[in-house]
Image 1: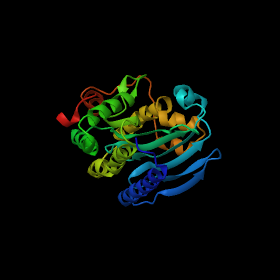
Image 2: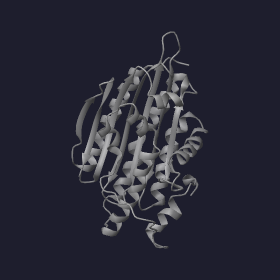
Image 3: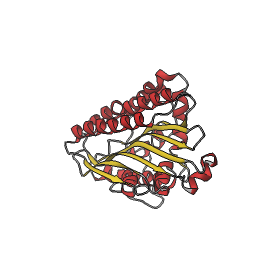
Image 4: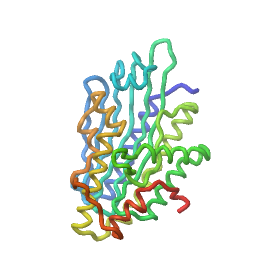
Length: 303
């Protein structure tokens, strides 16, 4: 396999962050704040955040590059072959929570990890993906998003999209609720089965496809009229998003365990959330259709 070049990965990640923020600022009309931070144990990052924007109630696009002399005990227990190795992890992660309940929440992440030891070959992998979480489902939106995911992976073979889609369906699943988080997308991790240059190119294709996957959906929905009923349901469903990120998400847990910056890690939390005891929407309503028609695993490209 080709030798890793983390500097090239970092340069692309920083450029990707800037490109995405510029496009989102053009949609929202409010500038994203910039917060550069340093991690005492090694590394740092740049958080770009908007709150109470014209379109986004809350949204963030974070870059981080953190390093360490050895992995946190919990991470080392999961990957014992990495024990005692120096490591670095870098990535861009974003979550956008539009105010309009008809506009879906979206998450995208691309990342690189490397662990090194004197006299041994480096251990590296890429990961990433994107997934869509609507509150009111639209089949056209789901199809467009999945088509964009498919097209990002198509240059690298026919097998990756079905594999990464299934991985996304499995990963973004609330086991304690027995329901998907949203309509899915793609997800991959520990990806190093091909030479470094090829794995990097695939990851770049995923990150570079995000704006085309999401902005057309956002622009279709942000002008739709809504009322308190829709906002109330949005807040209720956002509770599921919080539950997944705090209970199951590997990136959130690794960030907190490795001494990452808490404000940046928890940027993904929506600003207004509600929980209700054993509540279910009335059958036949648009709120009920979310569960019956959209929070199900299906091949959206054939729907």
